[in-house]
Image (cartoon, rainbow, N blue to C red):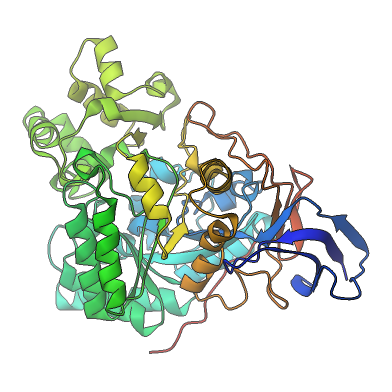
Length: 539
């Protein structure tokens, strides 16, 4: 054996009772599990005493925005230090494959606030398969910090075929979108995502989405929508996704399944009842959440969808026109735009978390309302100025969630964890660095909302089952040795809204493919991560 963890408390990911055992690792896999008192203990070149530590499968982040970060930063401690060994990329319908030259330029500009402008990245790929290859040979061929799976982004596919037009596709355009989705799935993607409050993906009607979901279903993938409303129309939007995927025969995974804004305070039971009814009828549904109340997105995302038709430059042109800008303000403040989930914007809930232009750093850490007050102008004047001067690159924290909803949803039997972690900006959301230890430290140890065994199942085997990964997500002999060792008594998120890039406590060891990426609480030089490609079921 290469390595044995001695006297570990094995929390195996199944949700069953934990037990003490020695766990031996060889050739990147779990070779032997010897429970306490069950005979001869395994030996190895290295024996690590894990007494007092829980040994669990590596955590799976079901909603990550590390699409460029994995290529930019070989350290990537934001995730590795949390015990995350696999991230699912391509989220919210917008990412960097499949593209052509025009689409790549547009999508880079559109999601600068999520991933930076990419000026430090060699975009030497165009297809999904080429992007996954690029991950595999990241950092001079050494690989990446943690493993990564990919969802075909429906908004990018639509942009590729139709540009930024708000209309139904012609038959030949729908056929081309089907082809691009199928090609991405054949090349290893695990499903398809949408961002239905982001342009241009939000311009797709249910019929168009159902046609693409039929393709996803035929290859055994799943559909992961950021649906059309998390505010005034939230329950209707959830029902829309359930109905759409039932019609298409496609598995459904609901992204960051929250109930936000004042209109949804205390309404999580209604969402869970809706899900339970669908599950009882045989629907295949899972969801992910992060254990925090504020959301995080780009400032431009709150604008009405019509203001974004035509792409980023068209948005800036509309903002420059006083009459059009007043129309935008009216819809934002008086009506409730679809970009702001049908709820009139409350500027005192929108905190600037990052800017692309360093010269605008004074906006960071304050709400739009606070900044407007110090400038002696209206909040919309401040927001309009920032959108224009930062070329739409500003990110925001939106303080619109409810703790009782967060706690109830995380206990549902279909729940998994997703950080939704945006790593850009001067003051990112602490979920990017703290989601997984925050679950374990706050909601398990301190609040008792979940048992340790149940919570670990949410973070490991449930997402692995959704991804249909046959040899990950459990501590089992023969499984890939993606493992995390943590102290149940001290594990905690170090990140906070005041210091969001602080690393967690109580997670001394993390292994990817049987190799230490975190050892004795420190990041090693190991780059053991690779793309995780599910072999598609041929239609």
